[in-house]
Image (spheres, rainbow, N blue to C red):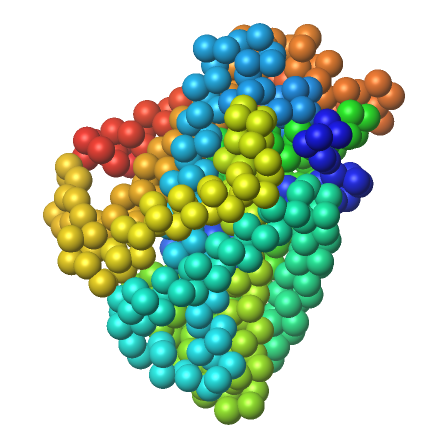
Length: 466
């Protein structure tokens, strides 16, 4: 443990783990998923899945890491189940693939921050030209991955924990500041009403599926990040309540993002929330529509509010890229006994290289922009979308399913109970632990198995049950 380092405080662990969960998806994807899913109706289902399904899997991942003090691949070997180390490799592959394209999207946000603070609001009118400028975006992505690598290379306590203690409170303050301003805009409370009053007529199987996917992805499950962070957790920490706090923090920030975004949407659509269907997606709204909104606020206020918004996105991205980079770094440190600094910078370089097709697939290269036509699809998707599908929705759901199977039927309840370390549990901790044991055995394997099968059949064979 001394050689690997660890979190100095439980708060540091919670903030870093919550930072891993909080990302770009919480800030822009979540509000649009809510809007498409009937407002609060989607929100209710999302909250249900986050606490009923995702929280138990998170507890299992943290427990596996804490009990072995190892990265995902090594963890399963130390538990005495070497054949299950494939689950660790799956998480490792997922993290690498996600970070390869996530770094590109982070570069878009990071670049927009510099564009907006210079008053270049017209960048929103030429978003496709902006993303296809691979030299400029490539430079931003290099800066972003280097910033990520610098923090990770400094170690767990001096790098990851210290950064989390600064960035997470700053992130929340920025969101609150933007909420206060957004609520002052015309039609703001029309947006809030749409967000908080459910329309259950829109509650379809597809909405339920999307809510589960959003909850699972936003909580960083199935990619090995929480096993890795759990391996740095103090032996006497309460795993169950820590997982509950992390889940609550992620959900809370996603909820705040909705309070921030819906007033902006209502302002843009002049209170006609049905007009959300005319906005082609979250990327279009964030990168094409919002710059014009900021410009309409006047040159000074527009630069201030717009700059804060894209700084917020950059911070959200950085909290996630740190955890994604830590997973392969910890693997090299544990498995190959490579110096942390060397491991970090080497992985960062590899990730940038494997992210080049995603960089080019945003308009710079027709080959990577129209990479593949999948069964059941009428048009080609980009390399970035394909990698997101493989590393994100597929690997994460399968990884979560396998972790629940392993915990319930291979590692078993007695070992799992010992790993979560409830020597003197409070009533709440005991109740949560009892629920986790029940869910990880009877709920998670069934639901995640169905979701994994549905995802694979739909994405790669064009077979849809929704």
